[in-house]
Amino acid sequence: MPDQAHDWLPTLGLIGLYRGGVGAMFPMFREVAGTPDLAAAVADARLPRRGKLRRFFDYRVRGDHLVVTFQKFRIEFNLKHPEAFSAYLLQRHIDLNRVLRRSFPQYVGLSLARDLDELAQRKLVTLVDDTAALFELTPEGEARRLELRRSGGAT
Image (cartoon, rainbow, N blue to C red):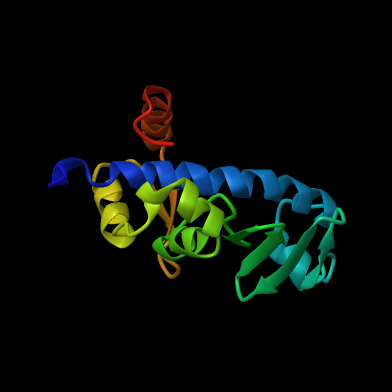
């Protein structure tokens, strides 16, 4: 039986994996939109609600989220808070990407809502939008994630 005191550690790894995908996509969209505020760019039609980016990436706006598809991967993130994550977005990241499910089986079946609550209690994440339950890593959370990554405890 796994140590329940540290059940949330794989969630830190999944957050890093998710943020890596968003971190690769967001700068390209910011460049095309001409602003870091993608929600405003969509509202002003500077960024069409659906299209192709750099010939390889198809995207569409779905509510407050931007869904980007390329080859066998999909990334979905919040337009207003692209650095933020929620249990829903983390779960979608695994659900939409069969390659990730095969490559990172430790992230399948995590209790993400419970783990995010535990991370918030430990002050490793902070709530940035309570209506969408969006969190961001605190500096302590980022330091812990990097420490786990270096030690091989989380990918």
